[in-house]
Image 1 (tube, one colour):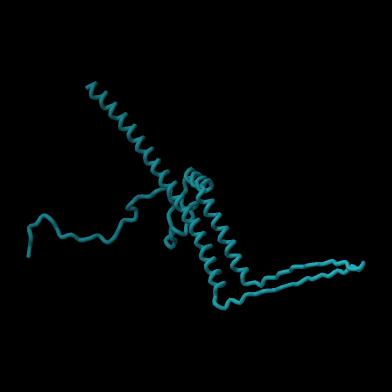
Image 2: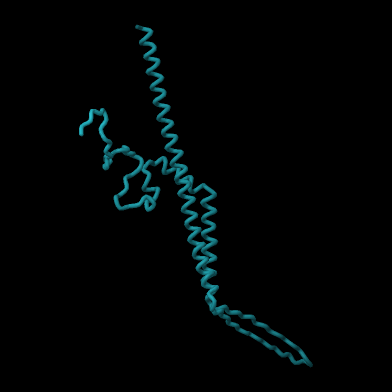
Length: 187
């Protein structure tokens, strides 16, 4: 069966060229076995100006300080939950001096009480596990806040670079149009 059609049947392309999207010199290439989430922003970006802005943003943002304070609080809670398994010791010394018919009697009492709570129903263990989860959650929150700051600053920085480049192109275009107008006037 033959056809006199202008169009051939569509066949999809399975391979993508190596440099399809070009190369960006400000972003370092990833190793084939690494994950983007495993790379620090300090090694991911190579633009020193951007790195300075990100560092300043992370150190001067109150959200990061708040997340760090939550981490400290959760670590204290975890420490308290771990210490709940230890016995508690109570020392309450008392003394009494009495005088009767010229005779002074001194009585001292130094009771030491040790208590230990058996975790039969697992409530202390559950509180400890809960404190571990909250501590890990606080760490993740700090990382999320830092990632958001890095993302916002990098996005704004690259947008500003793009706008600067557009401005240069517009200035060059304006100069060419002026020159072209002068050339047409001269003709």
